[in-house]
Length: 257
Ligand code: GDP
Image (cartoon, rainbow, N blue to C red; front, side, top):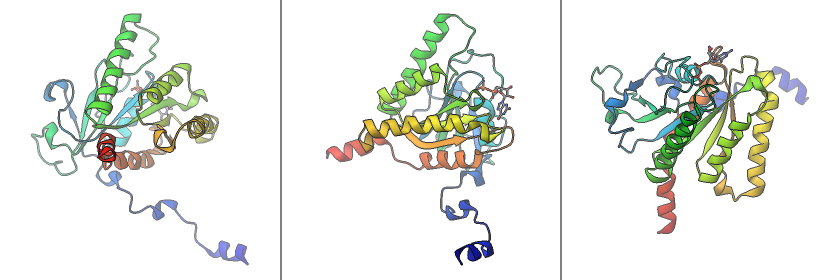
């Protein structure tokens, strides 16, 4: 009987069940690039929320950010290891028509951080990456409270996180920075299953070892392809959720009062 009913039912698109999720997808295309010179110092001094994208050089970060923004704003195939500073993309759903937009007009930001693990380049460049990116993450999350989450990109075609990806994820764990793993280049999502399962294990390990409030890794693993659009809308929903979240530092203050 149940089977008969099931056959009569039309297939459900689970996304219909989540129609109330913030839909950044509808307003994608409303991102603007801000050159470092337009920002106050290295990054905006306002209190708008931001999410950062981080991964090994050539992981597909620029392509993914462009897919999310539905515009070619981020430069792809950059010379590995060359960019040593954060690049800011402001989300301005209400200012699309304006020519003269400022960082203060942005509702939130996506930040493109320099890639790590580049094979070329002297040790000095690697050390300088570590120092500047780590300083940025600590300042923006732990001090300014603007950085809500880091999206850690990993190449799904490698089938598993690389040693350096693990080092970076562990550094996030140690320093209290929330992160979500995003698998890139999953043109054939079936091939990403092994990699996605390893990410689930990392989450489970934290559940065993930590209090609920201390779990930094997200239980969500995004499986994406900027080539064929797999998982881009879902990633947008995650970003939108972070844009609407409150800074964790405020919660701590409230808890203490
Ligand atoms: P970045 O250095 O991390 O910013 O990486 P890029 O976005 O410049 O991409 C590096 C290379 O990976 C380029 O040759 C892209 O064409 C390729 N790439 C990026 N995204 C995808 C994808 O979803 N599928 C496939 N097959 N290749 C991709």
